[in-house]
Image (cartoon, rainbow, N blue to C red; front, top):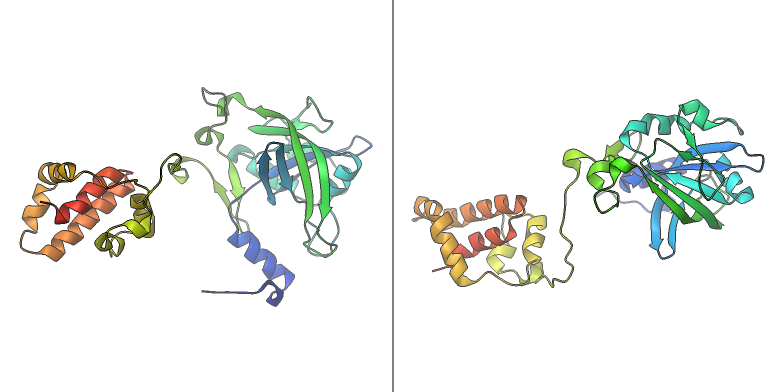
Amino acid sequence: MTSYAPSELDARKLHQCLLGGIAPRPIAFVSTQDEQGRVNLAPFSYFNVFSANPPLLVFSPARRGRDGSTKHTWGNVQRVPEVVVNLVDHAMVHACSLASTDYAEGVDEFVKTGLTPLASDTVSPPRVAEAPVQLECKVVKLESLGDQGGAGQLVFAEILKMHFRDDVVNEAGVPDATLLDLVGRCGGDHYVRANGDALFTVPKPLGVMGMGVDALPEDIRTSRVLTGNQLAMLGGAEALPDETDVNEHKLLELADLFMEHEDDGAALEQALHQHAASLLDQGMVDEAWKTLLSFNAG
């Protein structure tokens, strides 16, 4: 394992390690406005939602690493404490990247990127019309973490109104991950696209008291076939399947495996674990349990 104390690294390598290792990160594409009404649009991946009550998000237009100077967004929110946080989908990722160019103060990144400003309902800065999610916010707190290059400048923003493009909400009226096609930042020039095979589901253990990996039978817990993820899936079950169900599964689904390895217990156990692993990869936890327990059943 490669290990560092932050104090051992120069600022550039520390920045690379943090942004490369803490990823992917959602992108806040933030529109602000100065006291003269000039609009700024800039992306920040030091960003997330931190509270639902009140509805609060935080992003950080950190100081520039090369000279410690602050960004136009930071200056704007001190003078006009309002922002719109737009989320970035794949269709606008290149425009978002272009907006990160260090243009002179007063340059309108909407014009530079070709994106469309859309009047907000509750704040002065405009929304990005192309964005699938647009969050109008008032700034409730500013916190500077230092005056050195790379120091965070935290903007706490309370959401006043949320807008979701019609094509990204489901029948319940909430945004659907399978429709959003959002992108996130990784290290260097890398991004990730949350779409297609990159999306998967993991059931939340709400209302279920899983037995835990520590409670698995030893021959299963120490399996050389099953992965840590697969063991955790098994540990999410509240109880073992009924012995009658295990025997029925053995007769109906596993007869060929038992016949093939009837004279070799070790080979049979491995084959059953491999079959169970395949079932777990398909999310068939109960069937995987019955398969594993069949080795000692009957």
